[in-house]
Image (cartoon, one colour):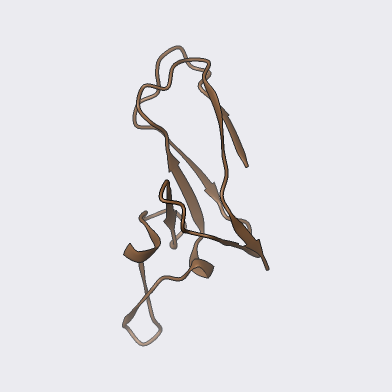
Length: 93
């Protein structure tokens, strides 16, 4: 669970919270509010949009075990002082 608060003096615009996924944790990517990365946070998307290179030069569709980071995009206009919680479902391996 991630707790957040806008401690600035202005409403938030285009703000995202990013967290690395701990080793041994496999994310359930079914939440439509989550964007994930399978390359250390370089590229972001939904699970079905992400691909990884294979050792023989091809590509394969990413799977939940490949997820390295998770990102939540907050709605524009979060006023100063507003706080919230974000969470994700995962399996500990």
